[in-house]
Image 1 (cartoon, rainbow, N blue to C red):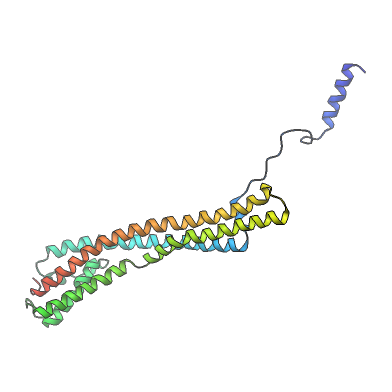
Image 2: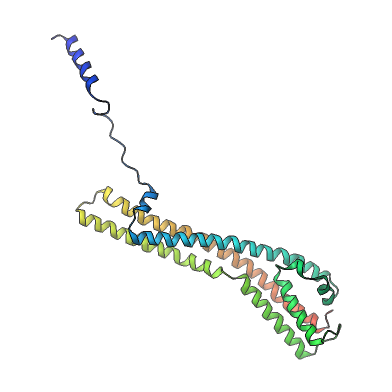
Amino acid sequence: MNAFGFALMDAIHMLQVPPGSGPGPAADPPKLDPMQLVLHASVPVKLVIVVLAAFSLLCWVIIFAKALHIARARSDSERFMKAFDAAGTLDGLAAQGLAPFRGSPFARIFATGYDEMVRLTKGERGKRLDEAQGVHVESITRRASAAEVTHLESWMSLLGTIGSTAPFIGLFGTVYGIMDAFLSIGNQQSANLPVVAPKIAEALIATAIGLVAAIPSVMAYNFFARRVGELADVMDSFAADVAARAKLGGI
């Protein structure tokens, strides 16, 4: 058979071979999908992921609610302090009404001290308080200030708890996942990457979710703590100021 015949037979053979059945580039290895890893994770790792996801959701709800709370408190307090400084007497400020400053802790401290002054003076305007009465009003206003600080700090402790515990909960899921990977190696008598990679990947996902929950919680806690601390310092001085003016008869 001449060369032309051999070439023709090779061409016919190539046409008869199905595409892709001959030698060629190897097929791409299956990719690990994080969602599939979570869905097929072991029960303890799934529980850890669910808990951390709930912590993360709760963290963001508290962050948005607390941000609105403190923002309103600061805004209303700025307007109230301007009205307080502009008012000639405590009676004059009370006559204006405190409804526009409903979100201000300073307005509530003022209302507490003013109501106690009116009770002690029996409604008599301009009457000075004696030493014991002045100390009593100051004690009332300082207690009101402490209560307002506690109110501003509400739910912040939960942010601190999430920030401090979420990484360790995620670490527990990671340790369990790695332990499960080593058990799989022992059971299958194989240390191939396809055997251990899914187990280790799902373990690391638990750590990642723990950090996702913890980092915003810690940052938000520090931010809100600084903001509340700034308000608390001013509220303490304001409580003493209200008590001093009440002692002088509300001037």
